[in-house]
Image (cartoon, rainbow, N blue to C red):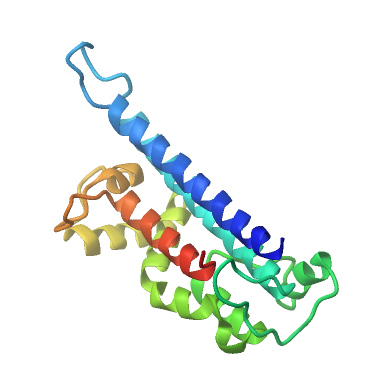
Length: 215
């Protein structure tokens, strides 16, 4: 039963990623012209909006996965394969575990910043396992995903500037009028087989989740 709780958290996360992928695929298909129809079913602007929503849903599911798996490990749960981490604290209940992970002076714990989650894990679990080693090995990509997430969720010049810098680093230049969804739908240069930026980020968080909860 204990193993099943963590396995269910992973399964729920993977289903969320599946739905995100389906949404992005539908957006791409509906925006492409077909032989039967005179034109595409939706505009490129609508495609980009749907692609942004697909990414945002995937990233929010990642945040939820981190929180739920963290709390379950803190309560002594073990994954389907392997053993659970050595804990430094032993909360008596789910509510206590949720409260104990909130940093002093804050109302809630953030799960968007990989470095913060790693540091939190190292305070509570021996060597921060299984979170810190996994998150630190992918921290650069996870930080990029957070930059994109923030650009979708918040309209501010500083957030947009961070996103534009990311695009320049990835594409070598900033295409004029590029929407966030357009970047996510674009193919990663040199990827073989061809892969969109959206899929590349979803694959990373999925792989990280499967290492945090091995099955």
